[in-house]
Length: 389
Ligand SMILES: *Cc1c(COP(=O)(O)O)cnc(C)c1O
Image (tube, rainbow, N blue to C red; front, side, top):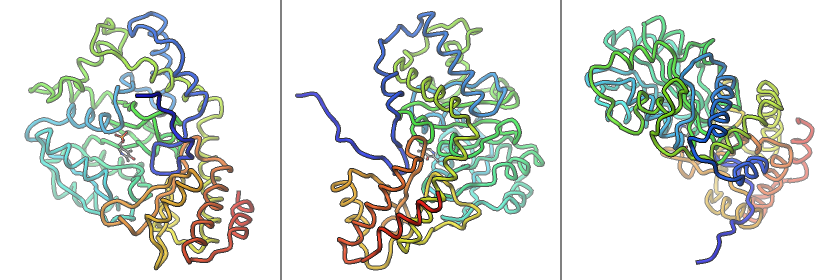
C-alpha cells in the first residue's frame, strides 16, 4: 500500500461540500485523550456553539459521533416506544427513511405522501393529525436534499402543537444555509450533519432536544432499542453533570474540525451566512437559466443550497457529470428515486457557496453541453450569473 492523495475536487453535489482548509488544519492538530480536561473545555464550547447555531437554549444539545443518519436514529429510537403512532411527512428520500425509523423503533407510521419537488401542505398535515388523534409525534424534513424543497417548518410545528404532538425535524441540509429557529418554532428534536452547510468533514451529527422531548424520554417504560444512541447513556459523557464517564471514545480530531467550523461561522455571522447562500443561489440560478435549464421546484419553496435542475431533452445526464468530474474536477449530484436520470442536484453548501464555485459550475456546464451536441453560450451565462451576484 501507499499513502492516499485524493484528487483536488470542487464539491457541488448534495454533500459532502467543500471543507474549508482551516477546518482541515484544525483536524490535523495533536490528538488529546477524550477525557483530557483541555478536550473537555473544547467540548463545552462545541455545545455552546451548537446551541447558538440551532438558536436554542436546549440544555441537551451535542454532536452524535456518527453521520447525519445516526442523528436521525437518535431522535427516533429515544422518542418512540412500541405502540406509538407517528405522522411522517414524506416528500423525498429522507422522509422515507424517517418512516423506516419509526417502524424499526416499534412505532406505527402514518405517511403523508407528497409529490417529489413539492413542499408539504400544513393544511393536509392538520387534517391528518385530526384524523389520527392517537398520533403523538409529527416528523418532517426541513430541507429535502433529494429534491431541493424547503418546508415551512414554522407552520408545520404550529400544526403539531395545536394537536399536542411533539416534532422531529431533519435539518441536515438546512442548518447554516437557511434560518433554523428551534426555540421560536418549538421543534422538540432536531438533527443536522457536519458535511453540508457547516463546511466540515462528514461523520458528526449535532442534535438538540427540548425539555418536552426529554420528559417523554424519561417517561419511557421500555429501554431504548439501541445501546450506542441511548441518550441517558451518551449524556453521562457529554454532560459535565453526568460525571464525564466513559461511554465511547469521542472522535477527537473530527470534533476539532466541527469546533473550527463553528468558529468560522460565528466570525462571519449566522445571518450573514444565510445571506451568502441566498446571494450565491441567485447568481447560480441566473447562470443556469441563461444556459436554458429549468428548476424542478417552484421559486417560493426552493432551497438556496440545493439547486435541482431538469436535464434537457436528448442530453445524457451521466455523461455530463462524468465530463464535469474528469475535465473540471467538479462534482455535482444525480437524481434519486423517481428523479434518477431526470435531474441534476447542484449544491451551494457552506464553503461551496462562493462566487468562484458558481462561475466554475456555469463555465464547466457550458463546456460539457457544447461537447455533447447541446450548444449553449457560456460567456452569456457567466455574465448573467455575475450580474445577479
Ligand atoms: C445528507 C442527509 C442525511 C443523512 O446524512 P448522512 O451524514 O449522509 O448520514 C439526512 N437527511 C438529509 C435531509 C440529508 O440531506
